[in-house]
Length: 186
Image 1 (spheres, helix red, strand yellow):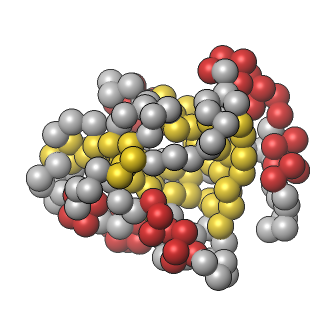
Image 2 (cartoon, rainbow, N blue to C red):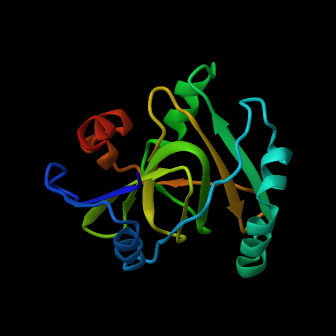
C-alpha cells in the first residue's frame, strides 16, 4: 500500500501519516509533485529485459512522452541477489536535485522517495502501480533498501538520463531508511 508521511525537517520522529491515494496525491500536488495510481497489469520474469517492459507499457509511456516531451526512457530493475546492490543503493541515498523533473512508474516492488521542498520532509513509499513525478530543483533522495526488489520505468526530458547535483547536506542520515520505515509503518 502506498504511504506518505510528512515530517518537520528537524523532527523526523513527528509525522502526519496519509494512506489514502487521493489524499496522498493532493498533499504531494501542494508541493508540485504528481502522484498517480496506474494499473500495473503486466507480470515479468526476473530476466525480462528493458525492451519487454517498455513494450508492455508502450501506450502509457507514449502518452507521457507526448504530454511532457520526454527524450529517453529506460527500465531500472534490482533484485536482492544483485552483486552491486549496496553500491547502487548508495548512489541515491544522499540529498540531491535534478535540472529536469524525475518520473518513475513502479512496475514491480517498492522504494521510498524522500522529498525536501521546504522545511518539511515528505517520505513517499511507492509500490507497484505508483507513478511519481518530482519537479526539477526539489531536494530529495531515494532508498530501495538493503535487499532491493523493484522494477521501474524511468522517463527523462534530456537524452543524458539521470544526472544529479548533490547538496552536500546530511539530512538523509536523520530520517529512517527504507527498512526502518517499513518496519514502523508496513
